[in-house]
Length: 344
Image (cartoon, rainbow, N blue to C red; front, side, top):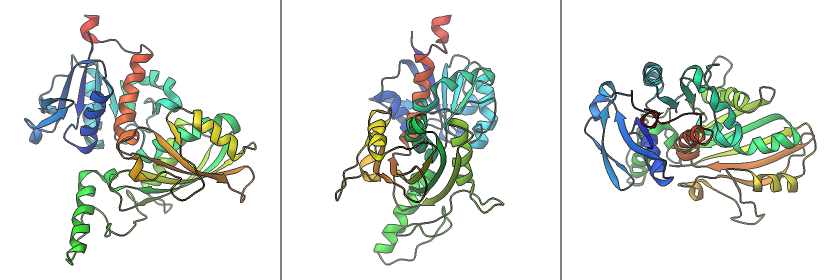
């Protein structure tokens, strides 16, 4: 028999995408249940060609659940993930609640799939921040070849990274501007329509934002603690898809042509790099796609052994839902779990 999978936060943007991807990839589940807060109980959500009725988290029995995809926010995960794990399910959490816990693996399957086996300590696997996930996918094969010393990254992050409220605010403000109405900023600190905001998450004592700190800490945990990382994270008026301008300094020489060949063969990467108008990827093309797109590969002559590139990915998929499902697939591929019903 197959597995029983729970999606917690099923009514949210990422939860909805998790259900879509489970169906698209034909995950071997005999049963999928949709779970959310009590106020969403009874709401209907789509799963492939089926409709699921949402169960309330507080009333759900997880004792026969094998895998729980958690996308309900940090506070909810802090409270519920240990309880769900104690019931015997492996929790794959999309929030920041467990990413920096030394006993919880932080996994991007194309980069560090072997780390998933560490779930046994707490029964939880953490999904990285969306901007980190798409960064480390192309960094991994380049690091294996020439050893990365330093990464400087500037992000151009879509409003869907802030959830449905962020998408609604961009839509509302854009319509308001075109109809010559005053617009109000509620979700974001400043107007997002026809603007960019160099501020994501809270400010920290050193002047960086927590989003920037996340990229530093997570890249080190996933890829290599010796790599120096500096990030500037910016919210832009794009609905779906994060973009990143990345400058890399290597220990060893690496030509642009070799980097292009390496990335063309790397799992999860798709190189779109023609030096002509339109010969590069943008968020518009990557929306709804699984790959991490790499464009604008070129030498960075300001440092020794420098390389620059442009990285684009669908933040709701590789940055969140797809990565979580890929982690679940990794558990099955490496025989790290067994379906409870089969075991019984």
